[in-house]
Length: 169
Image: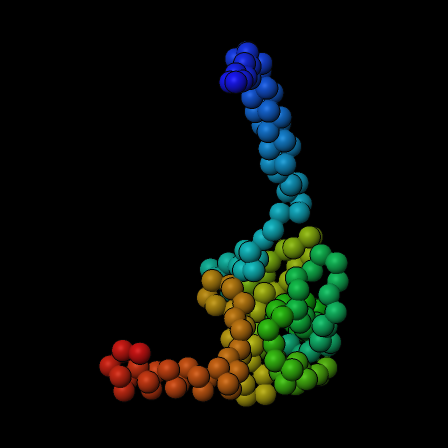
């Protein structure tokens, strides 16, 4: 015995059409854009190297705890000729550097001013204090990670290996 299953083509097309409409409606609801206030900004925070300034001041306070609306990482509150300035150093400062930046330490910071959520911040590119010069950001404003001594040794070893092997690994 042979069984033939017959389905009307109109029912099949109607079912497919309804499924397609449901999928389109679901995708449109999930693809709505977020409000512009919660837009994610790159870590350069709109750094403008054309408007770099140099600030000389004295550390009033080193702030590690984040306030709502401020950039993540270490902030230095500096007292200088232009009043109190909030300098953002980012989250990649070593413990040794953070401990060295005590209240009363004279510093020089090269960076650019940026307004974030209505408050002005000096986005530091270079930090100079106690005879040390630390590059915090690239020339385009992206935060840089310090290279640890283990990373330096691995980098030097890989360069040495490349020289010895002529580039073949």
